[in-house]
Image (cartoon, rainbow over all chains, first blue to last red; front, side):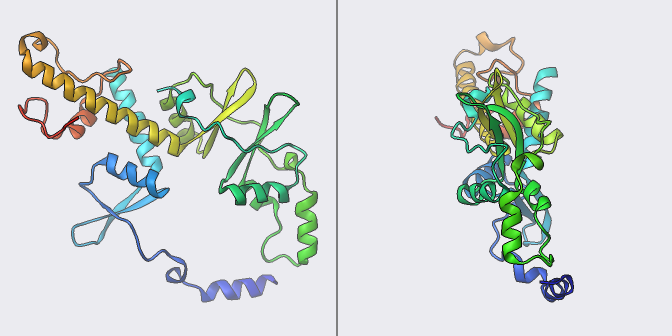
Length: 79
Length: 195
């Protein structure tokens, strides 16, 4: 495939063509540990966080949880 | 919690002489993205790491003018040693899991090889760290709960203890997570947690 052919094909595609439409979500009040369980069970690396009306509030990643556990450990050492 | 107890020990490895095509097959068949590269007979001396990204960068671009056969030839002849990472960040089996998590986050790597006296003995990923974190939190919650019940039975014995949350590692939980894990606080006479 030539470069211009590939570019042409990619230009025809939109995000909606490739995205996962059925999404597992959490809300801001979901316990962190519950989000952690979802990551482990579903093998996800990232979860969208939604408001009560299902609008997007943010995203949470496995790395965010890692950071939380490190921060927790450090706070526990000095506290 | 130590790395030894949480690491994956059934590891797929590659050798420096293996072709990229072989490694690509190993990754696809085992649904993995990182493979430690080892050499030596009898023991597994870690010499590098190869990731799906290394292969992607070494492979011809999708817009290449090479034919299918030429691409296959190239992937079959390029050796792992030419595109693996040699300066590998590793960790010992007796290190704490939080140290592994710190390395994974700070160095932005997805997989940390566990090396004991020069020999590869396992790998840990962020998912293993998450598992360790959740298990520690669950243990702490249980112990906190039983400590709370003990303090309710004999408040006099616990009068001097400011926060009765001790994990089994002997480390004290800092207030933020302790509060989140016991939303009613330690003063509440009845807890919703049951063992």
